Length: 445
Image (cartoon, rainbow, N blue to C red; front, side, top):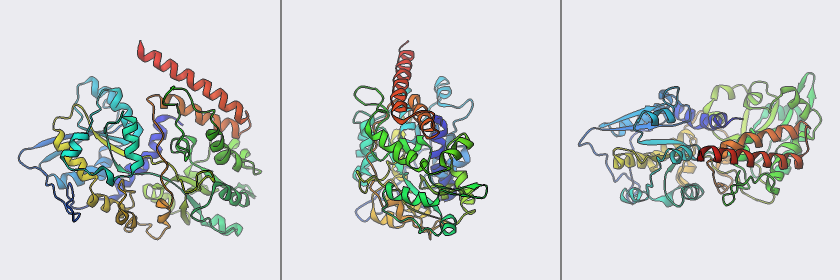
């Protein structure tokens, strides 16, 4: 899976969820001791704020996610969005000296261009000035932002994204297998999967399949980075990667017909195989899947449970693919930009999006309890989203995109029997180190 494809797979869940939310109503830019707004938007002069994201989202999606609410809250602010499209990609915008005030995306996908184009801006002082309480956010995300920014605050999170396990009740009912439960281990989930991986007529059912390796790896429960932050070398030969691949992809493939089906498809199964062909009984994916594409999920009787955990890491779920937002170094009015970001991360605004089914960036229990209560699928087991602890976010490198595809391809080769796991790990690590070295050499020319 390419870097852009992986980002799209994650951002369809945040961008499209935003599209389904509608306006969130009035909310303040901050809170006093009673949780009420204490900072009002300035209205003395017109202010233009220009947003950009390299997630591929269009203007309509931005307006549904952020724009409409911001214009309602800040009527004297001109809120403009420049989409990532031909002629308006970030490199093209920078070449044209186009100002960008605010940039957002999944954390690592946003941090990389900020740093690459020297757009990073430490918001630490502004956060203090505008009384943003950093302890109100999921600590693993704030830690990741700090760790990836040399201790600085280049971004703030607007929502979290974690993995859960969806399941098709119809397949369980067909074969008389009890439904999965919150709190399972991967060993338990794989045992259930064995009972559901079977062929009926011309249809090969797969008991479990997990999201593409790029997603499972980027948010892995062992918090393993792609590249060692000290040496810059591949980590792919570490035991944790071996454990991940064995448990998530190879153990399920031991069942008769599993590997053959993947070979027949010439790809890993995906979300459409879960909803359209309905051949997958359990599917690990980002929590926002049903909220992003509700029409697809209408085709099956589904529910969800918490992501299974490794017995070595009890109670630890996936890392968060946090959607984060930051002020650029070239922003014209940084105070106005900070007001907007403070509003988007405020308890009041986060409560409203939580009710719609967007996982909050904040740790407030009241916000968690309100999750999805106004969503079309409010009767589902949404407590599964918060059942596990969020794993610490692994360190991110500017060269992630150079190795990610290599790691994913290795899984396909092992599952289909083209090579063994140890050989795949060793050879892939060598390829990754070579790719990174070539990229560094290219940048130094």
